[in-house]
Image (tube, rainbow, N blue to C red; front, side):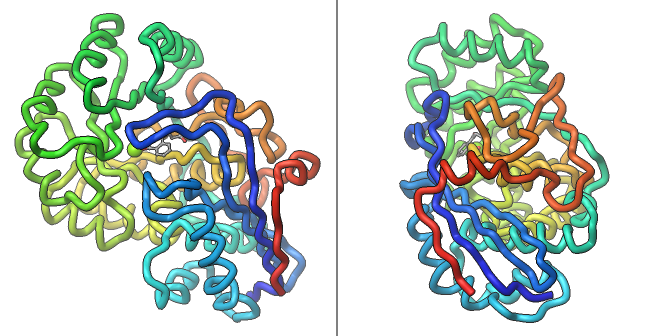
Amino acid sequence: MKIEKFVLRKMKMRMKHPFTTSFGTVQDKVFIIVEAYDDQGFCGYGEGDAFEIPWYTEETVESCWHMLRDFYIPRLLHVDFQHPSEVRELLSVYRRNPMAKAAIETAIWDVYAKRMNKPLYQVIGGIRNEVEVGVSIGLQPTSEQLYEKIEQALQNGAKRIKVKIKPGNDVELVKTIRARYPDVPLMVDANSAYTLEDLPLLKELDAYNLLMIEQPLGADDLIEHATLQKELKTPICLDESICSLKDAKTAIALDAGRIFNIKIARVGGIEEARLIHEEASKEGIKMWGGGMLEAGIGRAHSVAIATLTDFTLPADTSGSRHYFEEDLIIPEVVVEKGVIHLPEKAGIGYDVNLDAYERFTTEYLICK
Ligand code: OSB
Ligand code: MG
């Protein structure tokens, strides 16, 4: 197959509520869409989910635009290849920048699945057509607002609750949630806000029967995570620390975490995510699908990857309406009683809602 034309779009969608983590607050979701047009007239979509500010990973919307326009698109345009899994190798000459790679690689997987006339989740090896999901609740201005969000999530059937923590907003917060909801499947995510100097505090979290503690330490702190895991009963889940198969292998060798949050964006594409899944499965690591506050196209890809065999824990992916008044796909992603049912249409299984799609576009570039 050959890609004869790419279109890059910069998009902006206002979120219903600001989303706050230990690294900062997102109110406007600014992201990239890649459209890939093949030699048979099929069009595939991918989403670039780096943030405007390099706080979760080092990439930004602008750095991704640059990588895509100046390197990845010229590398892939008019090149003949058999299968989207080859894109990983074709782009491997360019170091890192995984979110930019994922944006274009996922678009090519979507085109390929459409050519095969099969749903993407089946093409990538998914084994189920529904995915259980929980919610990720950002840091809230008041505890009333936090309880309100938890209450809402539970009423909607969320399979587990994840709350963000940061220094000064941690043990006491978890303690009060646990007092109110003794049996709710609960976990916390620190987004790298702690160091090993916080060991005594992190050990206190062991008392609250958490499913896991997500990314307590820095992205580069694999050795430190291994030290911490030895001191904790609660499993550590790695997020920011795993940006490639190589990172996953190192984390496994060090026993730096017993659970992986897998995001296609963070690891550089569907193929890298599949390889990590394969490796982690062999080693008994549990997995679940992470989220990037995606719009519909990224959401569709995130749900697809969560259908792989060992994604056995509830994903972070919410329905479209959780973050946005209106999404850019039809139908929108819907969560029913904590479950997302995957569409059986070819490719990502959702169509672009052209009216919304154009309105959310702030810039575009045609490359052919
Ligand atoms: O750490 O998983 C994270 C959102 C943006 C960046 C990082 C993270 C998150 C979330 C929310 O926790 C996931 C989602 O609902 O999309
Ligand atoms: Mg996280």
